[in-house]
Length: 461
RNA sequence: GGCGUCGUACCCAAGUGGUCUAAGGGAUCGGUUUGCAAAACCGCUAUUCGUCGGUUCGAAUCCGACCGACGCCUCCA
Image 1: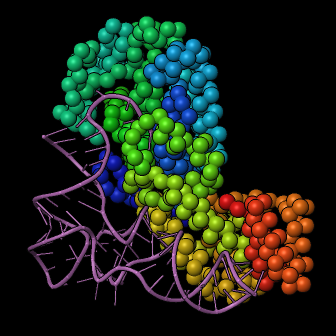
Image 2 (image 1 turned 90 degrees about the vertical axis):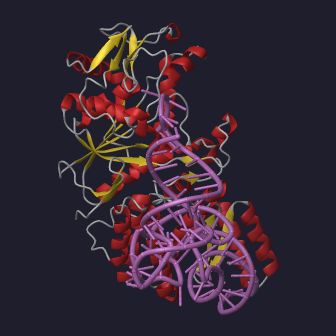
């Protein structure tokens, strides 16, 4: 079942129907993190957007080969390693593992490949040699620059040549030229790689060009990134691949908008507030993930803790729905099922340039309608109705991934005893004791709800 | 200076020419239910979409001006 998917292509500035180069497999590249520090919530807005894109493609029966790079060569890493007198790879491996850990725990699927820049240095060197031998690049003092005038390709992908500010004291011939290889400097100390042009390191744009074209080829379907990478990174990344291949490098450029701070002070203390790690102390990862999908990926989100609370409440509402009707979460469940109207609306919303807010609206409409229709018969739901609800819940979760599958917290004996005491008291109409016990349970983090089928305890969030 | 985006209820957020007297979530207040709660359900909360004009049979949606917020123009998810 391959439906029409529309993506907003940054190149054309409008929505376009998605048609992959090869219908059997979609090639997708996403720019990953520079591992010099712990990733923050804004980084993960973009990474959850990558995951969303892949999941929506897969929902439409596309198989996706995805590559996400890890930039472990960078000025910031070098200066941090040298100023802290720590081994270079200690820094990168530390923050890489934090990144991968959070990636997984936010329920992002692993891409086909995570690729480190440092593992492709020789490929980058030979790529630069190719550019040099075609006169698309030139060497100055051990650095190599892309020759944007000589490469004979359209440079103005996202920002035109004229718009680029003049750079004084530059080794470059033209203002739109950019570094492919950066020569070693004193401050770099012991951190360098050998090359035909001397000690140095590959430049950022080249890292992505080489990783993308090596693992996916010279023509890829989708290239994702944060909007801030549009220029210069994506323009330069694209232009050097195209100079050699003479083919269009990326057909669909997808850029996600920024997550803004409430007060746009870029102070370190505020920056800390936005780390996923610190948010985890107060909020579940599921609510963080859902929060990142409550607004469309191309609109700005101004961060506010209240929004996370609202996401948490949305999840509670869905989980209560699941619980009330005794539905089962099973990620495979919705497959091979004939989708009904609401589900088709849901999929269509996602296929319309990943419109997650609209899809959420469709889903909650379904929950409300279902509640209205079946509330009185919650205990003995008809099989067809149960199947319908389970199908949609699982379809929803296959993309949003914010519901816990099979994560039931076994009740401790203490809780069980308290519940029994309360039931006893209620049977004896000893309301005072019953309420006291309910307060104790609440203090222990459990909310009691009395249902026709007996008391239900829910872990406080 | 150049290029571009956005402004929808108390808050968040879809909708971009007629099905819009504007989806959905949160919040508030009434009601049903309950021993009391909770959950769920019912109802209320934008005749209006930054402002002012224009185009049109018809505009939140198109055009213009203005006001306001913001992004990019070689650090950046």
